[in-house]
Image 1 (tube, helix red, strand yellow):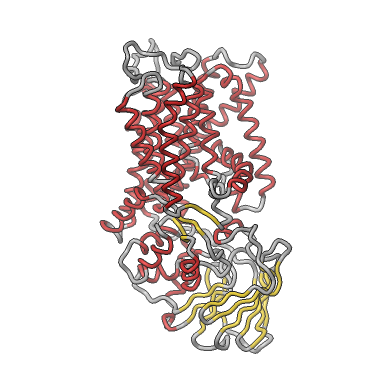
Image 2 (cartoon, rainbow, N blue to C red):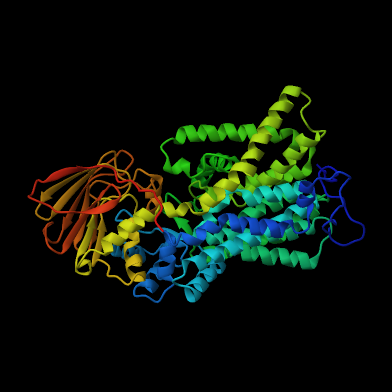
Length: 621
């Protein structure tokens, strides 16, 4: 394959005093293959944008899921929507940190009874929010058009990413292969197919554009490009907090690619860093961020907790980028220790694989440094492949360089024949996965959010209960709090009635011992303690323990903690209602298999064992 011309990994400086420009398309040597010509073709970016959109096009038919329903409701003029939006502060949050507002959410059933009284999870993404407002205004009842909107942003991201690789590598097959690998990366699928996660695509689009402009000023300052860099970076930050990851690539660029004095390098980096600082100050002044949640960590508000989480989460995320298992399996499957050890081994193996290349090539060091630094913002929440838009930039650039080096017999290859064969084999496995398996996984992942559809079907059955508008819905257990959280939004957007009150006693895969200990009293024993899963800590932090005797008062119900686990999680809780448990106005349900089943109490002393409630997975369009 055709190589690229680098001196210590840097693009050759062009004559004149202007900024670097993209090299023209080289004609290629005699015998140049059609594949090589395609990888260098000037319209490769357009072709990859179309390919990415087509691969993810099955998501057009999957409808709305999870937060999509919340967004539709909050951005509508339906009754109660504006109050919920005020409590969230934006569609991208769950609580604004105000105790009265948090209490209102618990009272309405939007948050569970164990919610931290000052919970703050409020994310400021006004540009992304604008796109959802347009959705709600233009095609409120047309989910496929909302999905198409997301697909168009994804296509734009793939186009600008191709332009970035060509800016760094030149119009070479290395740039083309890196762009192909990024376009086929299955880790993008979930965010593309989940309308509510469009912010990740928009933020990446603007951030990658900012990095490209930043690179174009690497040897010669250009005021228009410098302004464009800051404008695109500002747009990225206003689209999603994760876009701060692009600063990692800018830092890496200054360190490894810019051939200048330390002072001038710092001066070039200063404007984007200053912009991020200003953005964060405004973010803080607006009261945005995260505090009190075990699922979201704010590195500014909780630096020590964030540092500890980064050590745990970064290798898991990198493993998800390199191949399988996906990063989210670390949270949702019961093999965390094995998963983490595999992630550490994969991280070490990839580092050893890249080491000869990193020693020889500054561009490889740029991609590696940016990739590692970009993982840090992704560690602010639980590991998930949908957080890897930025890490994938560096990973695919490195992988393309590795492949070209081994195929072309680069000078940096290990001298040992054994190590060379091992390196070639490992590179072929990773590249083969991303070229052959990823394109098959990408459409699957783009539709994967639809596997939660059976849970939503179960919620719709609840709101179809005759006379539910005049009754209190008491949910003994639910596989996830979303099942309760979606009751009111789904009722409103489908024109149905919602229960008068909504109370949920337990969520997650926790076995329960449930007993009627009084005429109006039920005691729930959580086997092994409540809040066992990572997602259960969304509304409270595990390091904020609860205490025996603690009481919480809601309309029609008072609860008291009778026992807690050693780490302060509820073990046994007594719930007292203001009317008998078998009163007509109380509608009791419990989870059975894949739906909520009505339940009726008998005499005082009645008790039963409730197996762990698990989320059913399936497809229902």
